Length: 466
Image (cartoon, rainbow, N blue to C red; front, top):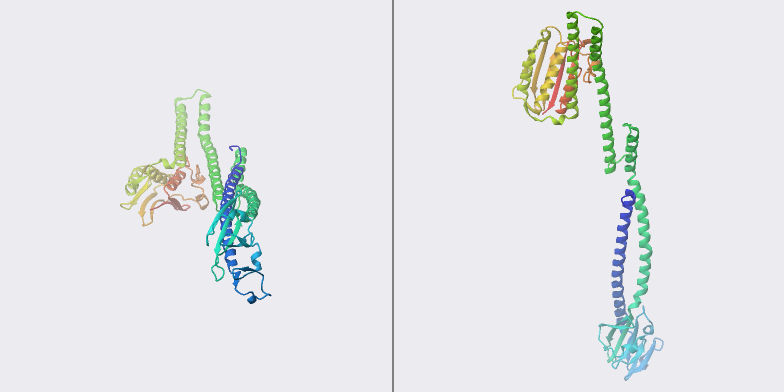
C-alpha cells in the first residue's frame, strides 16, 4: 500500500466501501423481500379462500337453478350445491378444495390432501405443514350459510410460490449490484484522477523548481476556491516570498560588496603607496589616519548591515511593550541636539501622554536615523523640527528640515538599501539609515511618508495606527 499512488489508494478504499455497501444492500433486500413475499403468499391464500366462500351456494330444489348460469352442481343433503367454475382454477398457485365435516374431499384440488387428512380444521387461521422440507400454508373457512352447515373450504399454498419471484429479484441484484460497483469504481477512479490533478501539478512544479532553481515558476491549476486551489495558491505565495527573499539577499550581497570595495581599495592602496619607500612621520601619520577613517567607515557599514539583517529577518525577536512615545521623542531629540553639526538647531514638540505598543530600542533607532539623515543633508545654520502628535486613529511622528531637499525622482529610491543621493553624498553615511527606518515602521504596522522639494527641505512622517 505504501508504494501505491494516492489515486489508487482512494480508488481501493472507495471500492472496498462500495462492495461492503452492495453486500449489505443485497442481504437487507433479500431478507426484507423474503419476508414480504411470504406475507404476500399468506395474504393471497386468505384472499383466495375468502373469495371462494361466495362461490358455493345451496339450493333445495334443482329447478330453481338457471341451467345457463350453472357452472357445476352436485347433490348435497336434501338439496344441491352450486359451485362456480372459477373454483376449479388454481389461482396464483393457491389450491382451494371443499370438504365435509369428516374431512372428506367433496370438490376441488389439494396436492397434499393425504398429508392434511389428519390436520384439524381451524376456522380463519393459517396453519403450517412441512412436507419433504417444503413449508405449506393451510387456511380453512367454515361455511355458515343455510344449507352449507358442516362444509369447509381449505386453501393450500407452498412457500415455493415466492421462490420464482425471489429468484428473479436475486438475479437482478446479482446483475445490477456488481455492475453498479464497477461503474462507480471506474467513475471514482476518473474523478479521483481529475481531483488530484492539481496535486500532480504542484508536485511537478516543485520538482522543476528543485531541478532548475527557477523560483519564478508558478503553479497554474485554473480558477477555484477549494482546498487544492488554496494549497496551490499557498505554494505560489511561498515561491513568491522565496523569490523575493533570494532576490533581496542577492541584491544585499551585491550592494554590500560594492560598498565595502571602496574602503578596502583605499586601505590597500594607501598601504601599498606608504610601503613603497621610507616616509616621514607626518606621512605615516596621514596614511594611518586615512586607514583609520576607512576602517571606521567599514565598521559602521558592517554594524548597520548586521542590525538591518537582524531586523529584516527576525523582527519578531524584538519584544513588544507599551512605550511612552512622548518621553522617548523628547529624550532622543535632547541627546541628538547636542551634535550641533553644521550649526543646525534641533527643536522638539511632543504631545503629552502619547503611548503605543512597540519596541523602545527600535523606535529610538527609527527617530535617530531620521534625525541623522536630516543633519547629514541639512544646510549650515539650518534647523530640524521633531513633532509628535496623536489623533483618535493615528500617532504621527515627523522630522522636518530646511536642507537641500530630495528630487521627485529620488523620493522613490531613498528607502532602498545603500542608496544615497549623488548630489548630496556626504561620505559619512552607509545608505542604510532610511531603509532601516522603513523596516522598523513596517514591523510596527506603520508607514513612512516623505514630502520634499529641492532646495527647500524635507519632511519625513511616520504614521502608526492606534
